Image (cartoon, rainbow, N blue to C red; front, side, top):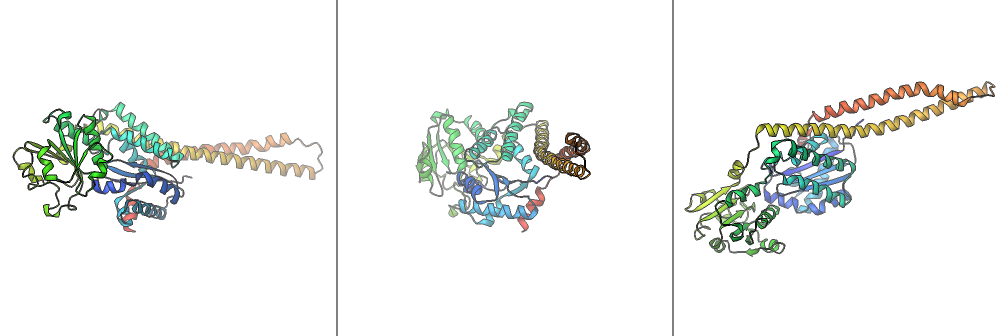
Length: 429
């Protein structure tokens, strides 16, 4: 009965560098329109943040194994053109999920279970805005609307019913909380931001929210001027000189092994810091270090890396995580029951229509037979009642079976993972 048309293509900090995510996210505003226009989809929602780039798709076809491969390759090709990467690289960047695996992933993301800091609350708002953007663009579908609304509801339940909701900080927020303890008040802090991508934008927003107005921006790829044209900051091109006049460096360029081969791939190393201000706090938020870890041994240099910051983040206890996972599991089953229930309702309407057609045909047949037998006083209403009784009895049994099958299918689908098979097909094709 069920035609599974729900599919997701997700990339996050688990698989990619921030630089790679930036390249994908750069096309977020355009790709939702392009996919809706050029791909076999009923709807599309794009969730793009500094840590993830995810496509949620209502495919206009049954998702067989061949259909998964075809749809993923086609959509990855569209993303590749818009993000200026080759199609195979784009395809390899994504994890592919279908059906309830897609719902389970989104619900976990919205609940903060898939964040760098477990329990992060910012993602819930980003999930809501992703649906709003798609809806306003005319690119969503009833199925995706229901999916994202259920994700928001799940996130709210986790926040209200578990201790996970009390963690609530992103890695950026947590990082500035940690380093802020050893700095002057934020309005007096001189900050250097290394990087200009999506993640750098999040760091800049958090700095300004805390009152930090003296922000310089350095880009290993030369994009600082373009970034500062949109933000109230000063673009700099002399990194060494700038380091002599700042209190903190926040690095998140992801430029490792790209821009500065003479420094072994690091944007900042011991040589660059030779004349830097002392004391100096450096925060390396890049997945692959922007800052040489060896500089942490230098006198009056305080270096904090992403791994250390993540380890220091407020820990959600295992009981809270398990409680949140149970809420997600329940939400997936509820979503699938509702989805299949709607399909069952459509099937019931079709059953009733066919039953009415069968009744009408049988009544017409009996009336014609009575006429052929010479009857003149034919009670059509009585014939109709006689025919309708057994047919409606059978119809009732079919309706009960249809709805029962929908409930059982929902439970089975919610506990049966298809994601590994889909990923294998994509990567070995």
